[in-house]
Length: 348
Image (cartoon, rainbow, N blue to C red):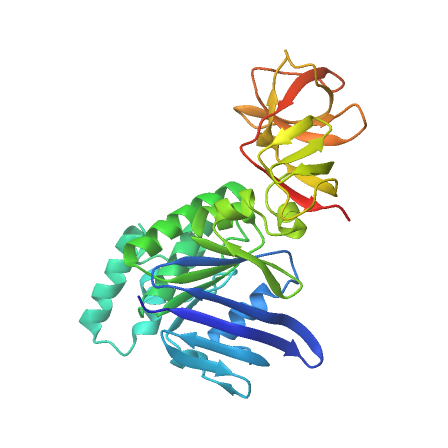
């Protein structure tokens, strides 16, 4: 299967200031990728380099087998067959929805352009809005129009730069799932830039977690959550705490919860000081357990509460508890550790 996008050892710098540092990854046709990370990590700069808006200072970028960027030579964005969806939608307010979608199809005959516009508006569920103007649409509807416009010329790859950032959290996750379904239906390769991990999980097949211009881990959402490559990824993805531990052997560590099997000490020797990652779903509410913890904070989440608990030694952990077990701040509850495997890192 041909590779749709290949980023080889790419760096981008603004003068003497490096922004992206030696990044490499590939996307195969039909795959939705994601660059995920905090503000300032270089993810948008890398996306702009893929689009052709930024020159690279090192490495190569290939699109569909064609080299499009090397240091000193950058193929123009309009020649790359790349579609772009921006965070502000960038719709033309004086054009109707249909005219916006058909904007990049002016070289087609009128009948062919009309068919493609109709096809895409049907695909995104907005055929009934063809004659409306963008201001008459909700934020989510405007985003689907922007997506249809970007997909209209059948780009080799679709680039989405924080496309849902203006929507609230619930809308972002829902629209991310809808956009993923649309891309999969059309077989479009895409790469999303976001700082929102739930958005990334909802939409992407493969995710690169970025920090300080580098990809710390390129993996599935499941892999990032359950097998973080380093402490930054472990801290950035999901919720959890790092508890002090000592390594017993290749599969066990000693923690405040006793000796725990199923741990992966990553080559640490027996006796080594370590920390073990504990997620909220690793702790089970169990009133018969002798291990007690005090409720410090709680957040209602419908079917469950997320409790912040203080252990006897003062360490605080998170625990998900079915919401029909309601406890006040200051209450003591029983908990036990139950995890299929635990991720262990060397202690700093």
